[in-house]
Image (cartoon, rainbow, N blue to C red; front, top):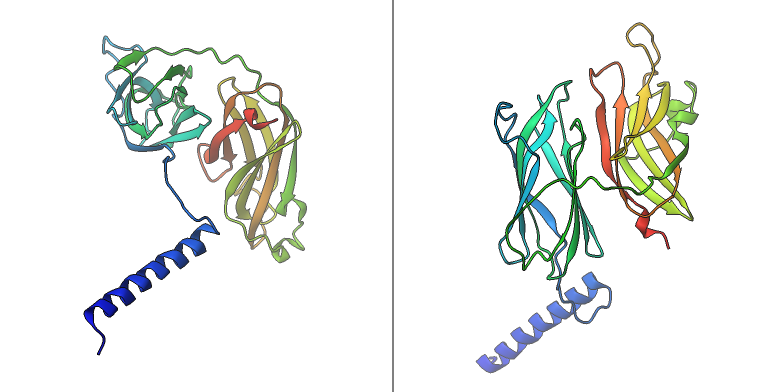
Length: 299
């Protein structure tokens, strides 16, 4: 019969071997892993809905407070959204002590917009100076940008005004290259094997920027594309020009369409973009994707 000491030794050896093998399998040979930095995230997002437009305080401001542990609380006062908006998204991109925060109006969209009070928390941030760019929703009549540099762990509460000083030239649009089902006719569309989810990706090649979006849609749809640079946002439009139901354009199947928007880099900066779908089935454009083009990644 095994003594208690032997049983204890077997137990510790088994646990040690399990941890060793587990670490090797998950971390591909790293002998020691230390998690020293958590990528900043957004949470606690809320918005008020339309505020009383008769309010005497109608200046757009951004209030910041810190919890002293690397997290920042944002209160965006009188930020404009569509009047019918029932949801928003706050999108964050962090790289090299530079943080881009984009407020996205998720609709439903209307021809009316109004001031809102938006709040959210971001973090954790390391104890370094971070350059922030906070961009108002694309639904705003005159989209504001807040630009500031702070140390998230050691600053006093502050109120900021917009600083719309983005002067960098956005990438020069060159052309759109269609792919996927765009190259198919009614005879072979059903035979295409393009099993891809709706998604978008950005590629940086030499001095070119390529934004490609994949869209699952009915076969044989007649698409056109267009591009619009509003200064604060780049809009890519994908339009189904079938005049449904007066026209019968579609085949009895569905497949994946690809649209590659090709641009040339001009200056280094972050440029928000949005991809919209226009068709006869929706009264307003449908947001397919949004994000930011970062031309600073070029060597």
